[in-house]
Structure formats: structure tokens, C-alpha cells
Image (tube, one colour):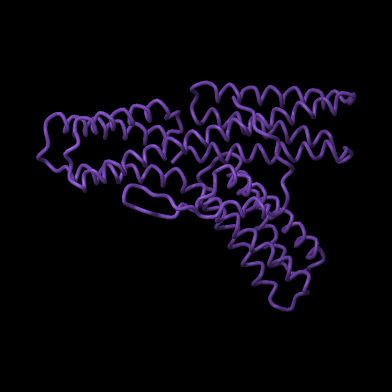
Length: 353
């Protein structure tokens, strides 16, 4: 497991300098030239964690501003908003497929609150509502982009395979026909791996080998259409493999960051004589060790998600038992761990279709 550089604590809004480096790049695939505007997946995961923090802060501000409101409708709207946000955070923390639905409910609850408040509100509350609407929109957009990342890469390969088979037609040799059958079977295994959330590296490597065999058996005397479709298939398969490799590396870096933060927390809290806190730190370390073992082994996505959830629960208990009387350094590490655990859950969910 590779160690990544430590990231600073999440801030309410994304780092403009970081995002300015992520301008759309032109990606040439065979005879196609298309803009590849998707930011690196880990940056998206980090931004989602920031978005969540921002929405939580926005809602707290709105709740504070409306604490004295006597409107039953407004009180109901605030409760609905808080419930919807809690569901979204749970979805993102567990990789649940209901995130999009719950984000829609969160947006609807925000709109309903604005409607029930009307236009006769203070400038401060108006700004707070705008900030809430903006951050909910940002969060929804980023979550959608993460959800589309792997599916988009896989669909490209599947469409390429279909196009190549159509271009070759039925007048091919028995050897090429067998190659195409093997290739499609291997591609189906890769798709099944991603659906189940099981490791796909071995099946991806087999798919690449099948493509190489097909290319060899086809030879060099190809029509321009077949040559283009074959090149696009091989290029998009490499992109899919690269996506998996980069996401796996991001997962490993995030786990390493969490482990480092927990170690630093243990040092910071070494003088704490509270037996409950000591037990919490030990439980947190055990939970992280289970996650690390899952990543090194061949466990199901369900088992891994459960262990990540257990680590989040252990972190939350540690924070609760420490209370509010903690140093800025301890709070900084706790916030880092919280953000990294959510990023980890998002990255793991992104490796499933």
C-alpha cells in the first residue's frame, strides 16, 4: 500500500488553485477527438467531502437565523432538510445507491423552505439561503459525476466491441470468430466484476490479452473501419484499466492518510487518562486494520463497505467521548479523519457500476 502526501483539513469551499489546474484536456481516441473534462476521481471525492461540510454549515446558519420562527411550515421544512441531509451523508458514507434520490429530496426540501419563507426576509437570511442552494447544487453535481465515471469508461469499451463485431461482419475466419467470442466473454466478466464490486484487475488483463490475440489474428490487411474500431477498443480498454489503477492508488493513499492521522491522534492523546478514550482509540485502530486487510485481500464489496462503516462509527464514538474540550490540533486530526473516511467510501463506491 503506497503512502500519499498528507492533505490539509477540508475547507468549506474548493481550492481554486487546485481546480484551475484541471482544465478540460483534449483526448484523442483513434479517429475521435473529444474533450476529457472529468477531474481526477480523488479530487472529486475531496470536493464532495468539502461540499458536505459546506451544506452542513449552511444549514446550521439557516437554523440559527430561524430559531425564533413561529411558523409551523418553516419548522417542518427545517426538520425535513436536516433529515434529508442526514440521509445523504449516510448514503455517501456507505456507498448506498440511494444517494441521487436523497439528494433530490434535499434539493426539494431546500426549495420548499425558500417558498414557505417568501420574499420578506432579511438580507442575511437571503444570503444564507442562496449559499445553501448553491452548495446543494454543487454536491449533487459532483456526486453525479463520480457515479458516471466508471460506467462511462465501461460503456465505451462495450460500444467499441459491438462496433468492431459489426465492422467485421459474418465473413471472418473461424479463428477470428473464436477470438471475438472470447473477447466478449472476457468483457462480460469485467462488467460483472464492476457490478459486484469485486476486484477486476485479473479479468481486465485477460481482456487485454484477448484483444492482442484478435489483433494478431486479424493481421495488417484491414479496412479503415475495422482498423479504427480495433484501435478504439484497445485504447478505451487501456483507459478503463488506467481508471481502475488510479482509483486503487487513490484508495491506498487515503487509507494511508487515515492511518497516519490516527497514529498522530494516539500520540496527542497519550496523556489522556480517560479509559473510554483509550478504548476508543484501540477500537478505531482495529477497525482501520480490518479495512486495510480487506483492501489487500479478495473480499466482497459488502464486507469492505461494512468495515469502512465500522471505522466511521469508531471515529464518531471517539469524537463524542472526547467532547468539546479538545485542543485545536486534536480537532484538526479528527476533521481530517472524518473527511478522509468519506472520501474512501466515495472512491470505493466509484469502483462499482
